Image 1: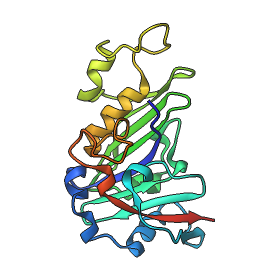
Image 2 (image 1 turned 90 degrees about the vertical axis):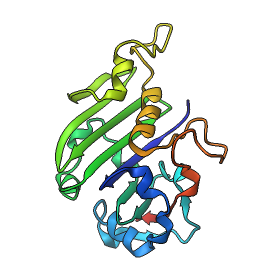
Image 3 (image 1 turned 45 degrees about the vertical axis):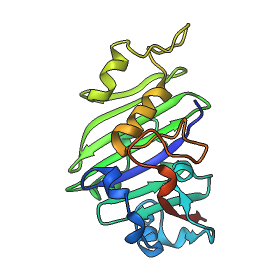
Image 4 (image 1 turned 60 degrees about the horizontal axis):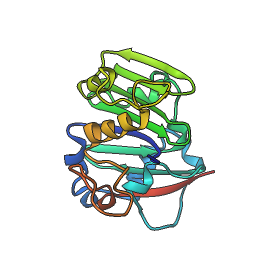
Amino acid sequence: MGAKTAMLVYADGDVATGLTGAAEFADEASAAELLGLLWPPARIRPDGEEPWDLGDAVFPPEGRACALSTPEVDVLCDQALMLDRPSQLPAHLVDASMGRTLYLHAMHSVVDWFAFAVWRDGTLVRSLSLSPDDGVLEDRGERLAFEQPFWAGEHPAGGDYALPFHPLELGEHALSEFFGFNIEGADDGGPSAGRLDPWAVELFGFQVV
């Protein structure tokens, strides 16, 4: 497993459904305004390149960010969102989700770290962060249904692995559960096994100076 993500998603309903046909509503100005939640507008510059496929945009390089704003779903991708404790997401980013569902998804394959959080109408309902080196960094709220088999030992990492399951495997399940797509196994540019093809959704790219 080699996937990396750093995503914040605001949604009014099903994310995969909202992103299907998103190009009809997307424009760079709206994406830049959305990114202004994360960075001062004066620091944001369009990167001047072709739009990013979602499959690549989920983890932009340092100094870059990707964004997409549609009537039903807003997506921000930036390494600044990789928080060891997702519950500490700045309050103004959470406040912007009032009346919606907010998802944070972050993972890094080099250290087998995965973290996610879910807020509904501005209230944190679940937050988890863990890696084999640091153990469980955060575990707040009731475990969601897709997590239960992992904690029950149905997906063992094997050997002397420090956790009862591999964080990145749980991370892929979370991608599918929250957003309807996967990254691992779909990085050849073909459709993923989920409901949404991440290479069929385009985000605008920006420099953060």
